[in-house]
Length: 388
Ligand SMILES: Cc1ncc(COP(=O)(O)O)c(C=O)c1O
Image (cartoon, rainbow, N blue to C red):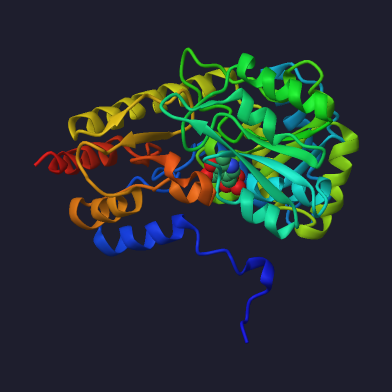
């Protein structure tokens, strides 16, 4: 007798856990998981400490989130994107973007519905759909520029399509989709009455001249989009797992039905600190982008010197590097070799594809640059051994 429910039998251990274990065993510089190796800003952490000690935030918050946090999410969406969000009926605080996406799927997608998934995709999306009994329909991005083929996208829309899972800035390709590219998605969604679950966790990690536009800001899309984001990437506190969903009240009400029985509510003191973080002035976000531009360039330099070809990402803190000139095998073999023989950990992207499209990942691996400059330089030195 197997101990697992059928719905999870096809799930392995996430690639991130596997790589972290292997990297620790071999003392590799870990550029795998998108997990900063430096702490979040002192003032944001101080705001959490103050909230913990204030004597009023250590009990359950409202299930949809602390009022000040919800207000700050709506104000942030207005300040950066001109979106008008109802903080009471149009926002939910969640346990990170991961829970947000899952609650959106559980609350808005029926078993048997089709959901379009752009490949390569973030690893929780497909297990989330499987657990909800929905059917993923895969549409790949095409290298080297990671663009959608309009005909492939169009063919993916059927009478059964309920939603598309959209992610921009995109992990792992680093693409920031332009409003023109998103317009095709928007047109198809409107034509086929499809909703968008838009994962924008890298909304503040965008490099000039790229600019992030939420798909909800496109004409006719506000009413059919639930937007997901979280604190982790924008404020270097991935361990807090504080996220949110915002959108039109009729869709958010569906998400709330699921959220109330998934987590009910999320860590109250962190929500108070999150409200502070989201209200920081524009200079905070400019400095974040400048910091990551420097780190991106250090990593890019290390990769090129090692013979790994890579284009600078438009957003996120990931670079996809092409190792075809330095290693003959596939991405999984290269990742293992890099960890055990070179001492650098990365992530192979092939697990983020359906079986039918796996070969499209090519000879590439993902490196994260949310690391100290010294860590990135050490990685660069080790990678140079690849040339030898
Ligand atoms: C595209 C994408 N969505 C969601 C998440 C998860 O975000 P959180 O830690 O807020 O759950 C990540 C984290 O790497 C991600 O890359």
